[in-house]
Amino acid sequence: MKPAACGECTREAITYFGVNMKSEPLSYLSSENIGPWEIYLEQVDRVTPYLGKLAVLVDHLKRPKRCLIVDVPIHLDDGSVAYFEGYRVHHNTARGPAKGGVRYHPDVTLSEVMALAAWMTIKNAAVNLPYGGGKGGIRVDPRKLSPAEIERLTRRYTSEIGIIIGPDKDIPAPDMGTGPREMAWMMDTYSMNVGRTASGVVTGKPIAVGGSLGRQDATGRGVFVTAAAAAEKIGLPVEGSRVVVQGFGNVGNAAARIFHDAKAKVVALSDVTGAVRNDAGIDPYEVLKWVAVHGGVRGYPGAEAISSAELFEVPCEFLVPAALEKQITEHNAWKIQAKIIAEGANGPTTPAADDILNERGILVVPDVVANAGGVTVSYFEWVQDFNSYFWTEAEINQKLERIMRHAFEAVWQVAQDKKVSLRTAAYIVAATRVLEARALRGLYP
Ligand SMILES: NC(=O)C1=CN([C@@H]2O[C@H](COP(=O)(O)OP(=O)(O)OC[C@H]3O[C@@H](n4cnc5c(N)ncnc54)[C@H](OP(=O)(O)O)[C@@H]3O)[C@@H](O)[C@H]2O)C=CC1
Ligand SMILES: O=C(O)CCC(=O)C(=O)O
Image 1 (cartoon, rainbow, N blue to C red):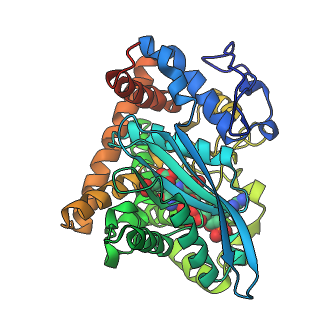
Image 2 (image 1 turned 60 degrees about the vertical axis):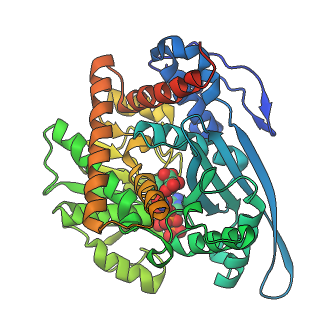
């Protein structure tokens, strides 16, 4: 399928830290042949025709500013030594310090972390936070390690990336496989290394060590707020609507609960153990209790088991992918029966799938807007840590909703004016901000 805006674009053939940055026009390639970084490059190519004279600077978006690869050796509980590969990437810092999460997952690679860092640059600019984009990760299956091993891994990784993180340089946060516990260890390790308590070095911390109220549910809340704003635009009521959620971790379970609280009906959800469906509605609070005991949604008695592929075919008003990249591809985009897709995950939709969804009139609220609630409350946490003055949860949620609605409205307006998808509109808003900052800092086109 020919992409909407950039069928003819070609790319320079360069290699960056072993990651091949040359790619063909990607919409012609199957999802099996592209990774997250190529998806990101395609998204940038699609926005380039809308950047006016800033387009000559677009290569700034196509290269990470710096990539650090670290070896993370730890003692396992049995006394043996294991080695893990870790990364921290600063994609762009034109608008402020790098900011973005840390992922622990067996499939983490440098090119994936580059893409995740780049999406942070776009996301932070799309919601107008004073940050650039960064991301980190370790190729590890945390489920195979004990808590003590994860602590040693986290502390060693933090020391290794300590040369490029800091409250005014790069502020990590949780992503897949990490949470408040790991953030507390990161903050403690960094603080020990610099000889003072530096609570502003990471966000997503437990409340007792400088975390912010509302951060835990913030990404899911932002997904809900932007999905509801999109629904308003097309006259779709949230109350009584059907919701399908892929992934029942930090983002997915919060989104499911918040939709449920708003009287929407969660009809299917999944995690790595399996998927379940009940058209009469599933109570995500009950699923949480089940998961706490059984380790996954599989076998949840209030619903029937379906396959992970079938999850995407369940009729619904809202579909929330909240797991990994590349879940919605040219293979299943035709089968989706949702009116709105609100991307809780980063990069869940390939460009080819975007085209199909666009053609089918399914509204996609892109990741760089839909899941920006997490980093927005991370920003609040960072500001609160600097001031040593903390806001109430009601204040946080109110400020979060205002920022998310404002960002969505601006993107919606651009989409209407330019007749482009919400993703391309978000990239127009964000890329313009990043490249304007770059130009003002000394690289005028
Ligand atoms: N945490 C945050 O604040 C933010 C996260 N995101 C993005 O949201 C997504 C989810 O992150 P987060 O919720 O933090 O991660 P978590 O680790 O908390 O949860 C991930 C969830 O996805 C499930 N999962 C993993 N693989 C699959 C699969 N193939 N099919 C179905 N479910 C799967 C996991 O199952 P199991 O538990 O069984 O392993 C788990 O339920 C990621 O793309 C992340 O980058 C975006 C913005 C902010
Ligand atoms: O809270 C943050 O700083 C970043 C969260 C994150 O990794 C993301 O938005 O993808």
